[in-house]
Length: 173
Image (cartoon, rainbow, N blue to C red):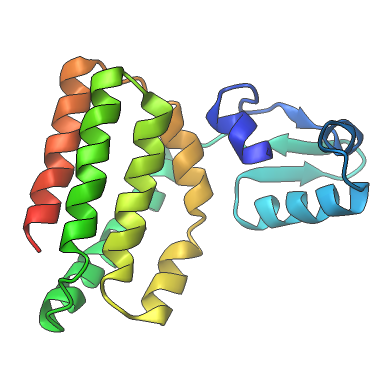
């Protein structure tokens, strides 16, 4: 719920998360909300200040640079290992995701495109068939990626370029 609120831009950087409000809206216990908040703090999407509350994290340019740099190293390793193992059974799945991306880009759906982007990269890393590599990649907090990616505003040509880049990656398999 909280991630969806961020993705839909109903919650933004610095916005306070109020446990009681979320609990009432979802009709769940505050304990369940507290646990979900702890998980999102651990993934780096939220932060907590003692005696003040929990807030949506604001990411600096350096945070994004570091994140993408580490993620790209892990993804390059995943592709290399997938090719070495001839584990290209995910190629059709990746191309199917690209087709969905083309549809989403045509509709101007930034949120849909962002979700498909995350799915594409998840399948890409899974193709290495290495649990440790996947766990390291997943530990980067790819919810953060989704939340940040949803905030991107891409014009028509940028969306098409974005899809083309993913199509070229998928065709490498």
